[in-house]
Image (cartoon, rainbow, N blue to C red; front, side):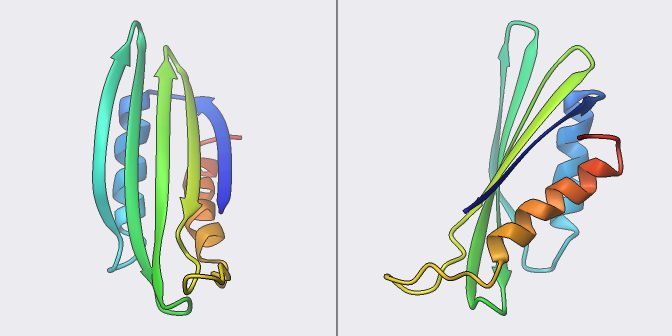
Length: 113
């Protein structure tokens, strides 16, 4: 498992759409499994679940991304999992870390820290 939390300025709607498009464009085997949006007062919350097949690990890794924003402050949390092989061994050849790092690389271009 790998995780990442970043904060930046912008619009949560725009950041959620941007992340969706760039993650989907990261590989032919990447897909958006499902997403939901919730409004809580003035805060918008997006939850998106992606899957991607990693040849080196021989399986699919999962990426859950939560984008929440209030005003111009946007918070992004990402958790990668499921990249391990077999029922006992969880060695993933770095698939989960790579999937989460993709989110960090995208957000860094927009000033997120």
